[in-house]
Image (cartoon, rainbow, N blue to C red; front, side, top):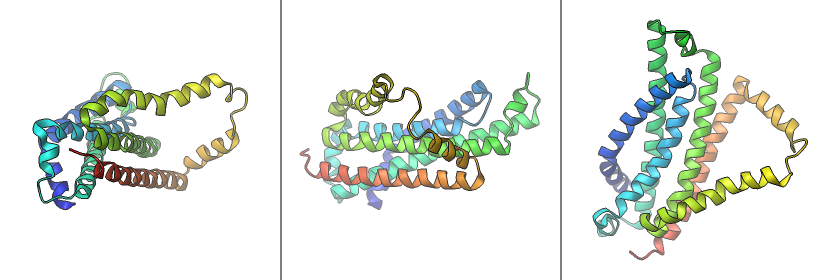
Length: 241
């Protein structure tokens, strides 16, 4: 697996550098545009998980790399696990870039007087840090979930066929349930479990609740990625290249 992981990182090298630079720029623009640094790390984290899964799959069909890779001393299990490790590495790299951009913006805002009340808006305070931690881990979970859905499809169908089907699959999994619940009348009146949700949100606002919530979301992301990797391995083993 280590060899496959290093190969993935070598292939990702130029793409990753460009993506990291772009991510830093996007984080700065988002922070300044929204007049808060809270959202920048979460957006970049989610984006990098999804871009990692899709970008890695795009390389598989360039110059028949996917077939040639299997002639190397690598098992299909190594290929799958190496791919997931590379996706996680890129996702965590995006988180680091987003956090770096957020702290850099806040430092500049504290050192230089910006127009209007922008300097005050971009200052990091305990409330902003707590919100940033929760939003970043939540978007890590979202990005990992999307990567976990699309990666097995790429391993089974290849990048070309998967790209044709993914929009339909994403709509069915993430959009249709929301539309159905919104139009079904099931949520009319009191929301089921509204009191429990309110109590949970109040608990999350406490330091202990924030730690539990963030840890739980990271653990859930790890479990989802692990299940996805097992599915990808089973699908990739039966695929003929």
